[in-house]
Length: 386
Image (cartoon, rainbow, N blue to C red):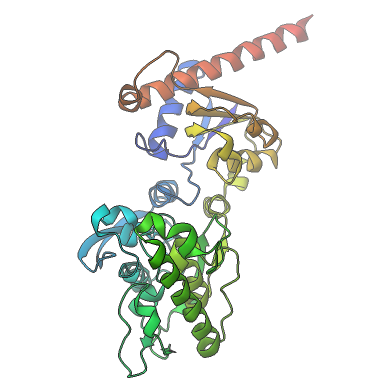
């Protein structure tokens, strides 16, 4: 029997690799000699860098960059095992968690640090970039990112515009003659699971601005500034990106990556499945075990367990999902390819205890699942003898 173990992280508890190792322990209690393959997974959100590095035998790299408020910090990104693919989470340099609540102001926060991470990856020889853009503190349309890569965003007097969504009001011209010359030879894929346009009531400023500290007055200013930015992009670069679904992601960073890096926006789980060659590696498997911290009604919308299940169904392989908890509304995953679910907590316990003991609980849940499969195998064998 061959079993593929392909979970996501259990957020706040264990990484995807640690979850896979715990599942392996549980399986081997029942089938000690079975063939196992561990493939740590992610869906493009938090933990994607670590999962892809673990899966491909890559490495984590640390760089000094500018945070959303212009302070110098250390930020990490990953170089995959092929040494030409970098995976970057913009939140590492430009994330909301880097800004104290009382200092959150998208008029001034910048994506400059994300651009610095991209440049660092190019300096290392990477020519394929996977960029996750969740959790941003910014609303600058990726202007700061572009500035870090050599683009000049200029005022009427020829000065550089100030960082942040507020600075875009003075933008008069964009000069990309100094844009990093390695960009045209670099493939950039962006993990983006929202469809917001750049501007308007469903755009970056109105939908996401308030959670980044924007007042209603700021939201109107930010939206007007992004609309102006979009017009200058069209005029000076010939880039029409504002209405592309996902352009408004991460405060408009989606639009900036489209315009300056010729990026492709894709579902995060699709990017990860492709990067780890999941469909190919599932060939010949008899069972797939996946999982994540919670399975709920949102799981069918691009989350790891369903992404893994769909890949498994290409080969007709049954799928079990192990979860920290199974919430109301989770039954939809059955129609999406998951055949059975099992949670890791067999009795009432505190959240703190569940987090602390997660590896043991995950292993125990895997053992319970495999023992039920063993019973089914015995029943099938007994039936074949009669």
